Amino acid sequence: MIPRGRGESRSLSVIEVLREVESHLEQGATEVILTGVDVTSWGQDLPGDPALGSLVKAVMDEFPQLKRLRMSSIDGIEVDPLLFELLTGEERVMPHIHLSLQHGHDMILKRMKRRHLRSDATDLVSRLKAARPEIAIGADIIAGFPTESEEYHQHNLSIIRELDIVHGHIFPYSPRPGTPAARMPQLDKATIKRRAAELRQATASAKAHWLKSLVGMELQVLAEQDSSGYAENFARVAVPADTTAGSIITVRPEQIKEGLLI
Picture 1 (tube, rainbow, N blue to C red):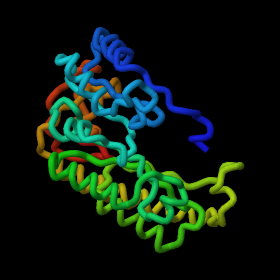
Picture 2: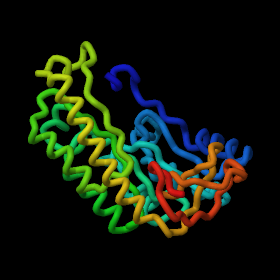
Picture 3: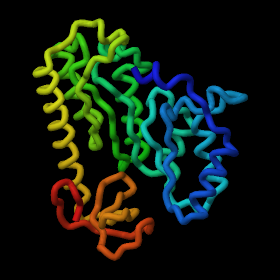
Picture 4: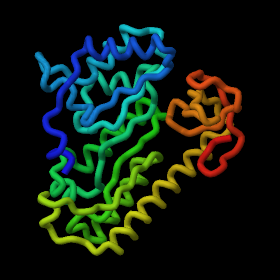
């Protein structure tokens, strides 16, 4: 339903993005997130059809004082060579990507009309981790899409382990009137709920193992307003209560409590 509701992508020009970034920097921002409905489609409606990597490079070149730049959810199949180079080689671009993955089986991806296959995602993550081992992977995954067999569900579970997805957003499928998926054979709600729970447990296990690996490491944490903040890899970390929101401090966590590095 989302593609039908949002209409065609409309890109801000490079100069408009630079002005927006500059306004936030003038207000004291230390991190900027490039976001949008379909971020990797940026530039396809602009003269010359520029790729997203060129926009990221323009931001980094224009503002050497910008300490951190983070990407929001991206379509992995559209990561251009320059964006890949910046994700893996530019320290100020955070080692964290969130993929619009949706599923771990090719047949379901085709029925969803996605532009990628499972192998595209595994190849991208393999290359990212080879070039920048500390990069953290997030992904959106749907449970119980119509025609999803138990075998297909197991592929969904296995891609969490294969990609080491530590920031997982799990969505149980629900039909939307007028969409092709709503006319497909539907799964019962109990099965969808169970499969979503299993996917959430798999991502929780991956995240718990990952957080343990971060205990004792020095992390650069951007403080929020609730006595916590986010490290470069988007791990949530406790900070002293008197830490100024928006500042970046060094934290060496000693333990984990309810998913929070302490």
